[in-house]
Length: 413
Image 1 (cartoon, helix red, strand yellow):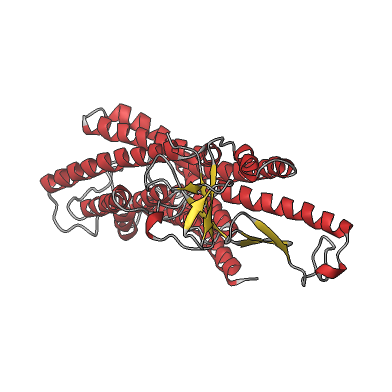
Image 2 (cartoon, one colour):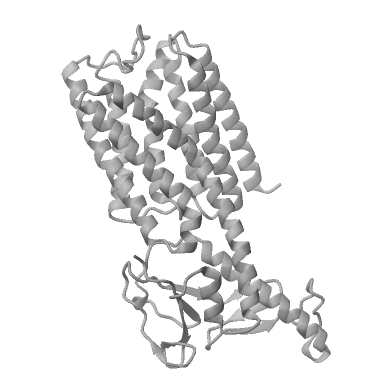
């Protein structure tokens, strides 16, 4: 068992223990509310995020989305401490009950690459943690940090019992949440509009569910801020349901990614048997505007498949540029550093297709087997790249280099 697998197993056991502890605290609480709904949410939210995050972490350890989902799950369980009857656990739970908001905002902003961009994205992450800090600060300025319980255990973290200070903190928290939730909705909608047709199929479940949760949460904050607490509480149930659905939306996206890659491979293999590489890629990816450009190191310029010079589009939202380096598969080395794609078999390697030995010992049958296998593996490679999320844009004009092929996907609307 690798170190990663051991770590994931340890996190899974820790998540199971935290969930059971949260259920125990809720079930044995002397609060008058029915604990059934809280227990269901503990399973749907905490374990949902931890389980899905561990699976995503195992599948793609280089992407931090799995780790971020696990973080959301563990921080969600902290809120169960507020159900404890002991003063210290109650006070600690009240202070930490909204830590999950910061982790949740970070996860949504980083989706799907696991990387937070500059500008608005980074500002939203800061706002998420500021909201967490303000929520914790309220515990220090009021004897009743949780207004839903009566009577409540003693607040052992109380420093200054001031209704005015608590009202100011509540107002600042509401303001930060309004800006945060509006920004999250904007970022997710922008990401949806910027995605191509293939990416949308994979990203749609999380982007749409996340945007709906952000919009519903914004409505909840506004309703509660204007005094319509009954309506706000009703909408908050929809918010919790949408948040609980996010892990399953993420799993649906992973499933669509796998099915979409399989379908793209099938289409691409058929098209590679005849016709151009560009047409095969465009059909397989569902993007008729896709263009290919090849880097010529001797003249330091990009050209199309007819040899005409191609200027890369400027860095912006209407067009995107992806540089694809030379790549390997089990049976073929793909190189386009000196022009159009060239295929070179690994003559010295024993392969599962039966092609082995050097070129002098080759036969027509071996060549046919190798070519069919190479076509299939190139198709798998390109289809896998096609459904991967795009990293933040980079100005390629400042770092043109040899040994690269640029693929220019569809215009973004």
